[in-house]
Length: 336
Image (cartoon, rainbow, N blue to C red):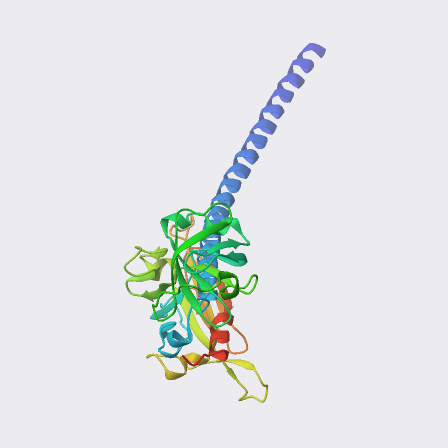
């Protein structure tokens, strides 16, 4: 009798152990599947977050240098900002905003540093700069701009820079005339002279053809999104001017939406940009309600409403970029 009870009790223990084991394994598998889905969703969001930050930082760095290496003559003729067509409109249901077209001149992509010392006579100036890393790759593009207190000179490198020093073979003034026989130290005073790469024209466009940030005729595109309405369903580009209309002196206000290049583009103080990115792939499972908006720039926000019943992930990005060099260029116009 005792033996049968012991055998029955052992069988019961075995069945209980099997049930507990199955429960533990099932819980683990369910947790693993959930973790896999969460990781996939997080990877989707991380990918578009990194992509958006890269786009925003690239635009910021290029736009911020607008006007740094330009002359008063180039400012007056409107070459520094060639086109400025922005969008200021709310959209609903994923409708694409646009178009956007913004062209400007910037030395972005080349060195930006200060002169520490200059010797010899022009054009054979030997220049020592503050940051040696800024001259990396200068031999492949031997044209540099030297910007003193009242002019922008164009120099050609004589050979490859050594560490943080280079020598010029030619030097031209803003009118294209050769500069010879002048003392380099007097012409390019230390710490008051900038050295930059050559100016390039950058163009930001957005429309049915997609999103493109490029140097026309030079590159296929620094940033390109072919299916902009799917991957970038919304973009807002506005130009800010200085106004005291509300009683506050020096207050930044939104300029009107420009459909053509205005005469008062010289008054632009800042550019503000906002956009929304969507993942290329949808999340697993049935579509869910996305009742949310991304709104930008108080006090009068411009909003993007996510499409209803979608499993795509979204991320929003925005920044105000102040054109301090462009503003300074206007305030220090020279008569030549």
